Length: 234
Image: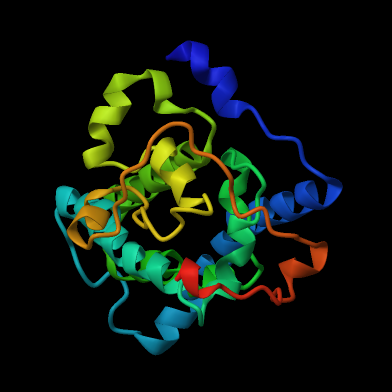
């Protein structure tokens, strides 16, 4: 497994535009979203819900289940929404990488995080919980898995990873989600059983091939692209 670490951290060849887009996304996701969430926790929610700060005490295991499992189910539907014709332009940039690697994790339009449930729900629970350490542990696990499933750490030669695909989203499944043929599948972030439950899980085989490979410009960080989903992609 450790022999695959260079594969995990390897990056695909990028244009200057690709590097800029991905690093702006990384800065936004790593710093910008944290600042927005802090503002909500310290200013917005206290003003709107002054009597609910640190209002609820929840068992640590329940906290983890909420952040790692329940919110993952909410994200499943959130992700399907982003693939609809109405919201696709918010998600288009994330699927524009010619080849997916761990840095693709943060590739998003500047306004996309506002349409993702994590920003709102994590801020809300951090505000209402008296102790949210185990909730935060679930959040950290989700973000760590997000980097892993976008990485090139392929489970191709590791049978144990293939066996857990009935439960977890692996890099193989998520890279398939980034492909042209099966982008309407594997919407879960942590778990693949949501896709099994709602019939969005597809049978795939190695290797995972072409991505959307759409034309991307720096302006697409702030301007929605003109690209629209074809009927066959919905």
